[in-house]
Length: 207
Length: 207
Length: 207
Image 1 (cartoon, each protein chain N blue to C red):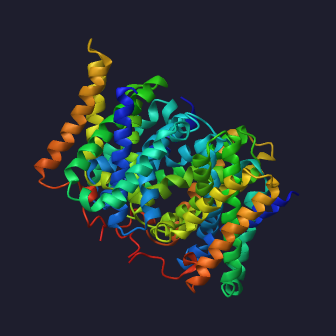
Image 2: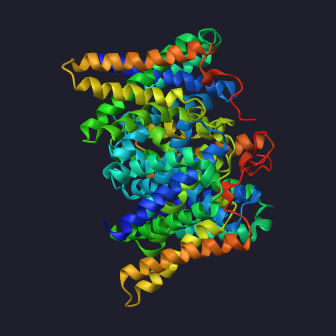
Image 3: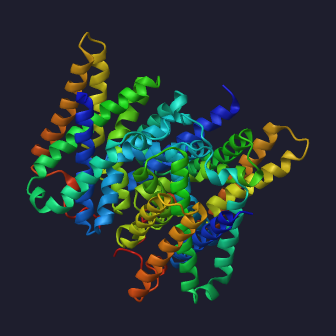
């Protein structure tokens, strides 16, 4: 298994957990929790695939995505009490997913021949849209519109990615550094604010 | 006309009615009612077509879908007072649509060569997503996340479908039995709770 | 540059401004404002492209759309105080965009060989869906469902377009007249109600 595949699975797992937690906070039933976990994990990649015309969308063409999401949802459902005490662990995974999906989306865009601006847009959509659709389904204003660090971090990571492509650095190192950068920015921003990431907060409603 | 086409039209008609009723409960104007009816009836099949890359999506390639939806919307708009007294009739149609669209979505998935898990997922999306998008547009938390019977019924019907495919039973009988099973489960669950299906209730809001 | 391209850019610019204003009214941060401006401007055309299977979707294949949207968002962000005093100016642009996108969507539909009913549906989706997705993301009931003039204006303009196609009139004149008709209807309806268009109102929430 390639290194990227492992991080991809971790990212999918983390996003699925974040969706499951958000749904449990809203007191959804187990089926609702699984559906929200699923939508959060696959939303961004699916929209990216649809926009560029990659069909069937990626989670339909590999066997592991749905399995990983189901495991993540069940772990959160049954182990939630334990994981709730470890929001930082989850946040690290989520940030990792954000980093990986941004870079992955950018590379898919480059393979399709898009320019830098569009590639970064596609990467940001890949990383952020799962959370947007999660919040829409939970009937809250998507947090991406309230906390600029989320989308801006992806854009920053993407810009650094293209800057490093101009150097002689190995692609693997560029990928690794940019993912690390996005994860690092997220960690610093959240730590500075002395709060766990907003999407785990209890009161997400606008009222 | 094939038997399946007749049930398909009935399913489209029923989902369109359910959307129109929900929009009328929210005091939408007639144009809004027609749009919600349209979106509820075509939402699931459209998402399924998009995910697997079937273009143009189905309602753009057959002449009857839009006509059926318009008839359903106008019947509900002008005959609503009468139909309101017949929620059970509407519910039977909706359950029938749920059954048909689940099986139809599964068969489309099989034609595209997907495995059992993905086929059942596609069938469930076909049957449920119209209601999800209806509720999102009505600014309520989709009922599918609150009432697990909805999605679980589709999954159960799909599992029985694949089990029966292992037998020598005729395909028509398998389709008929699985649709009947989904409709039956829905009827029993709703009857047991002694209430009309939740999407006709007046207070759908989360507040 | 063709005349249509100029109007297209103006329409994109106007829809982006309307989205940015709506997001600023909801006190979104600048990144959120840009994202809402983007989604409002490209939403309708993207859904139309996806439904008919035109990939990559149009804003990914031309270089100007994203640039125009970014300019519109920054102009609104930094010049908002000035523009707020000119809601009528913005409304004229929005109505122009509505007219142009309706006719443009209809012509895309005709190129793909769809009948009149489907073409008008595609044109209406092109013109209206950006606003629908904007309102969904802002967690309000889409205004299209509350103010029937919006969608009905597109349908009326589309019907006149097809009626005029039966005459010997030049296509450019037909396009111009139908866009003018849609803009005119919107202007008259809004003036008659003695209020600025509802999507600029401060209290868009349903509560």
